[in-house]
Length: 318
Ligand SMILES: C[S@@+](CC[C@H](N)C(=O)[O-])C[C@H]1O[C@@H](n2cnc3c(N)ncnc32)[C@H](O)[C@@H]1O
Image (tube, rainbow, N blue to C red):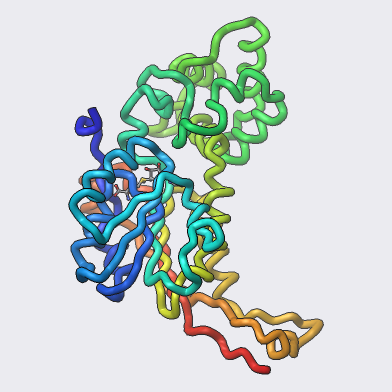
């Protein structure tokens, strides 16, 4: 069953070294996957340390049950990571020592054709990480407008042939040519745009776009990032591994915007008067996989790890 699908963890040592600062702390692994990061993090925790993991994929959660059974410090939640927001998770504000997010999909999700993520293996055109909710790519494509399909391919795939691909999809639909299998879509895209960019299947960008859209990956990321300043305690660390520029740009901008003084030029004294706590990060920079890691695991080649540290609570004057 699950044992045939493995995931090689990306930036493993670097990300755990960055996030784990207190062996007695409580940590969040927002993207359990197959638990590579979780296991190394647990190995650095004392008996009083805690790790709470999230994954919205049922197979990832099933895989985590073995760890739940053997390690009382570990728990798993079958939920989208935006649910780490304190109001939904019930975690006390300022209680978390570190949050790790390893974005995107796991190798088992791509390699198992039944999940519908792969343009190389035939399977149902699904691509949902959480198959309990939402609609599959096939369901969405059966009714979305041509303009919307083109926009999704353009915005989330950064595909310059977006309009032509969307037109081909809608033409196939009106001719009742089925688009319910991954290879049907992959072949349609390949025959529409011909040729391939160096080393890339012609359907790569379209599949990436539909995956990001159907799973609301960027909305999830933004909601989860927004929850982190309240969850992290003073000097708690946020470490995010992203795999494409759409994600990395959001992470970079989020950290940058929270690394600045909160200051309203129209009301310079507003902070002083608000009495609010000032929530800020210190940017600890970014790391990329080494040449050796990329050689051993080509899927790591586009990874970027960004790390930020929650500063001490700002002074709130009365
Ligand atoms: C790159 S893999 C993580 C691999 C993991 N770090 C490991 O070492 O095995 C990403 C995982 O995050 C999950 N995931 C992606 N977006 C999610 C979200 N918004 N909420 C919860 N889980 C998510 C996916 O289902 C997948 O299992």
